[in-house]
Every structure is written in structure tokens, then in C-alpha cells.
Image (tube, rainbow, N blue to C red; front, side, top):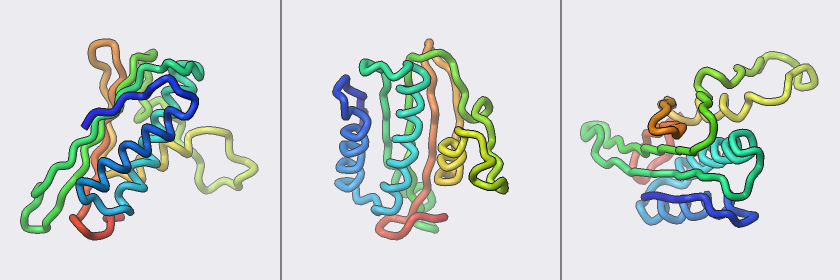
Length: 150
């Protein structure tokens, strides 16, 4: 399933809603959908706000694939999400500052918590630069009809 950010004011929320409807139709558990949508929203907003400087016409695409019977014995399935944009190269897996989660909230610098959350909510997160585009690849395993694995 491919989704593309449009140039409307509420483009990111509309994109997330489209992904949610598509995943619901595929029978993905809601807990997994919520986690994935939070990750997609964080990464797409980062792309729009930082990569494109808030431009409404940001070139962002999201591809989502549901893989079934990944682990037949455990009845494990997984979502594969690829978020790509044409902004300047930026690897969130290495370039985003790791937040100090032990520091008091008032002592923490702004930024970094979103990427930290994406890493915690997914099983895999990787980055590559291909054909002038950033690609962030996420994997989220789940049991069909069950709750997300934490």
C-alpha cells in the first residue's frame, strides 16, 4: 500500500488516517496500528518541518506492507513501513541526539524524544539514502488478532 503526502494543511493527519483505515481493513490489531501511526506521524512531521522547512508541498511517501505467516510456529506477522522523502540527507538512526531520559524534564534539551519513541515502538529501524531520497525502514511484529508485543 502506497500513500503520498498531499499539499493540504492537514496532510499529515489525513495521511495517518488513510494508513489506519487500510491497516484496519487488513485486520491489524488496533494497538499495533496506534504504535505504527505514532511512528509514521513523528517521522513525516520531522521530514516536513526539518527536511522541507515546513513547506506544504513536501515530497513524502509512505509504503506499508503486511507480511503474514512470517513465523508460522508463533503465528507472527509483521508490518514493513518505508518512509521516503527528497529532502537533504538525514539519518535519524545516527544523527538524532539520544535523549537523556534520566534527566529532570526541565533539564532536558528540546528534541530527540520522538525518534527515541519510534525506536522503542518498533522492532527494527534502519536508514539508507537511495536515488537522492531518504528512506527510513521500520518493522513491527505482531500476533494477528492479538495485542502488540512490547
